[in-house]
Image (cartoon, rainbow, N blue to C red; front, top):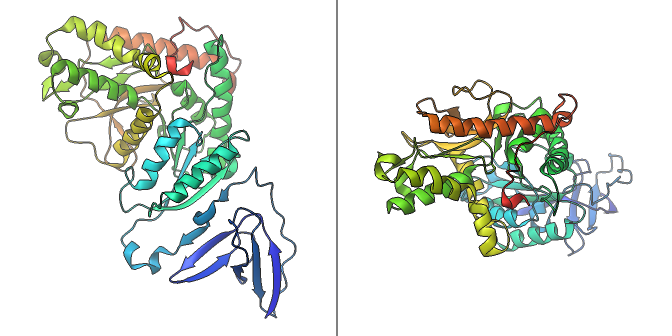
Amino acid sequence: MAMTKLNLNSTKTHLHSSQFSFLPRTLPKHLHCAFASPHRTTQHASISCSVAPNQVQVPAVQTQDPKTKPECYGVFCLTYDLKAEEETRSWKKMINVAVSGAAGMISNHLLFKLASGEVFGPDQPIALKLLGSERSIQALEGVAMELEDSLFPLLREVSIGIDPYEVFQDAEWALLIGAKPRGPGMERAALLDINGQIFAEQGKALNAVASRNVKVIVVGNPCNTNALICLKNAPNIPARNFHALTRLDENRAKCQLALKAGVFYDKVSNVTIWGNHSTTQVPDFLNARIDGLPAKDAIKDHKWLEEEFTETVQKRGGALIQKWGRSSAASTAVSIVDAIRSLVTPTPEGDWFCTGVYTNGNPYGIAEDIVFSMPCRSKGDGDYELVKDVIFDDYLRQRIAKTEAELLAEKKCVAHLTGEGIAVCDLPVDTMLPGEM
């Protein structure tokens, strides 16, 4: 056997039973390699490889700039042959979950829930694909170090990068959290354009490299219109696979109803947030139920429901900022978990959840071709169906019309990003949520 020594920027290894066999990503499989350096594999590891005499020695390896390609991180460069391990034979096939804005505060809470099995279950191994920016790459490495130190058995791979075309490769879930916050004096139209460009690019990347059935949850605000931009730039992915996160608003509404009725949260069901994730959103108390009763029967103070309850839910984020000094992060992460679990576990009989989805074919008479929060049920297969057995009154329809008009206006603002012509931005009163500022 001839021996050759190579210096590589990135390697990926596989553990088969009790033997280590190190296989660089860029080398043919007939090479059998072992590390000659104790250093972390992301730091130019030295690898010795044996080459069979009848095989041509590999040429110099062409490597990419490490800042622009995803790399396995540390111990996560050791992926395991699940079939060879007794204790993991009952595990499911590993899933790839991509997270943008992965060095941010929301992700700092979310990633550890994903890795622990809390979201997809205790038998679901997971690979995390973390997208950051040039400015956040060191923080992203810090996140990977913390994940490494947490010893999650289900977390089999972690890769980090700043190019969505690399990070989103084969993603089966994409949680798009990263977005530019609204700066002082910035008009909402400007934020729609700036963040819209981010989500247009990410939509194109998902379209090019992600799983054809990837499920996408857009968190970065304004999330409804960002989700619309994203899906319009991903024509090869079903539009129904895109969601805008309104679950935090639903959770807040449940909390307020429970407090007013003097019950715990688990007694509150069938809560919907209609429309946009903005102060035009419509918390629906007409269809909500408390301990099995219609909310309007459990709470006799109808004036409170129409005024204080609605305004409290709409402005809860601002109230939190006043107390906390920053926008919600932990509760947003929890709501992302709730949103995913609502899609991967069957909806309890008679209940539903809300999520912002594409309106084409909706049974409520809401304008088509926007992303609008509506009540849904799921069989637990990652898909959903819209709930048909909901009731409306004049109050609810008037409120829904207002949030619908806002989303239609936002859609015109981003026409240049959805392939629908020249943008015409004539937004009504600024209804941006405080967390977007």
